[in-house]
Length: 115
Length: 116
Image (cartoon, rainbow over all chains, first blue to last red; front, side, top):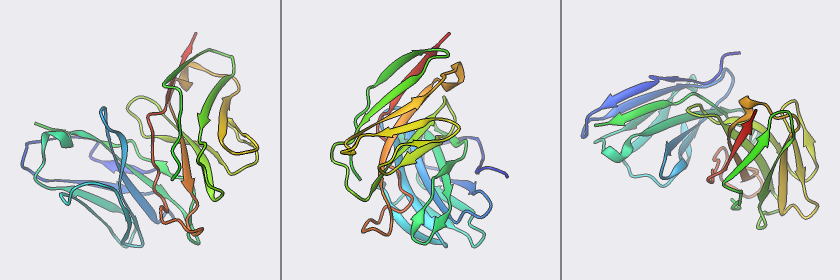
């Protein structure tokens, strides 16, 4: 069974640009969450999608947005990039049984560098 | 979600058991204890979780104290490949009054270094 796939693995962008990251969850998983990891702040929750709807959102500015498609694939977008947005962006997928999420499985992440 | 406290770092000799403690003294009755680990530059990997009973799987054992205020993750025979950051997370079970659903709140974790 294929794991969580994130593309691209590495990305270099210029300050002020925007970027879109993609995540394909494990087959059958309908919940997708996004996290940002930086050396200073650690792993921080960005948002979670289920059935194409955002269910939960972390404390990030509106420049960070996401969406989920009918096939459960998800994208996150960061507009007007800042140097501080340089981070490892991780996607996790999980099954939803009733109203409960099972354990989350993470992808390898996308390493974004803003110059 | 309840906060957790873990030692910043621990060492372990290869082949010996690694016992990683976690304090979660403010845990609520509907919160589970989850453990994840992150090997350098990879995504976190799920290890195990439990509510109040001890749990064991092919990777590790989880021992939760009777009052649920602390737990210990046990890697029975640590190898060099177990060197990683280990995160203890307490998470409400969605549907029991919580709205966190899939959200995981990571702390700083414990850096476990396994030595030859």
